[in-house]
Length: 252
Ligand SMILES: NC(=O)c1ccc[n+]([C@@H]2O[C@H](COP(=O)([O-])OP(=O)(O)OC[C@H]3O[C@@H](n4cnc5c(N)ncnc54)[C@H](O)[C@@H]3O)[C@@H](O)[C@H]2O)c1
Image (cartoon, rainbow, N blue to C red; front, side, top):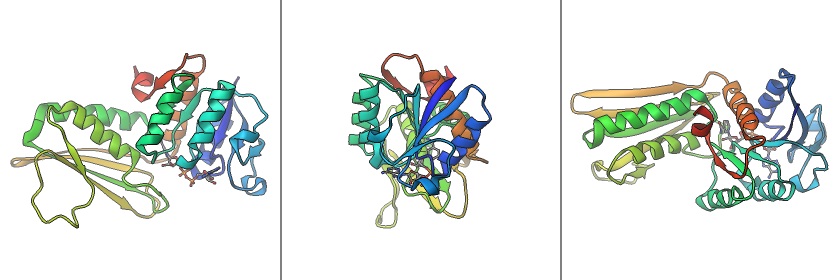
């Protein structure tokens, strides 16, 4: 039985993870973390408002919450030697540096997108960038529901980073063309965000060249894909030694 602490348990993803775990006999959520009140939580496990208050032992912690929670989760992981699966997006560069530092002590799994299909899309986009090279302009469009706080999505940045690493020239990211009055440069990747309705998550990578356009697309049809990815990551992480892991490690 793998015992899980679920951070952000009262949020949209927290609820999806809770229902996915309920269908898996080998997993159990033993505690949750959320600033929502216990009544609001209506969970079948104890909910703590702060990681510091948790008095339950677990094999792994899964987090879908908010970047502001990161310092307390890293403290909790390091002091209790609990592996962390961090799925929250919108971390600053400094925050990413702190989680990398923590991975020198405990196992940390961190991915801005836990879906198998999206991670495959990144591999395909890297291949396309290698073949098409700098002759093609690359733009990424991401669409999410109207409650999403951060923009662009962590996934859009993962795609851009993957494409950049595959190209030989240094690329820079352009998020806003509104204030720019000049033609697009060759070494830029445009990243555009749409926030509307209940869209679960859509990503298009456009390679536009002379007289032809290649678009690689992924559409998430339910949030279960992220929850199941997080549960797989948790299984993968338990028993691992310290280190920073991601979906590539899981897929390989
Ligand atoms: N990596 C992935 O594949 C993936 C997939 C979906 C969502 N996400 C990310 O997961 C995060 C959560 O998404 P969501 O849609 O469930 O959001 P949500 O707003 O519905 O839920 C977030 C939950 O975290 C709690 N929370 C926020 N700040 C807190 C704090 N300081 N202390 C305690 N609890 C706190 C909120 O009360 C809420 O219940 C976001 O960053 C989102 O982008 C990642």
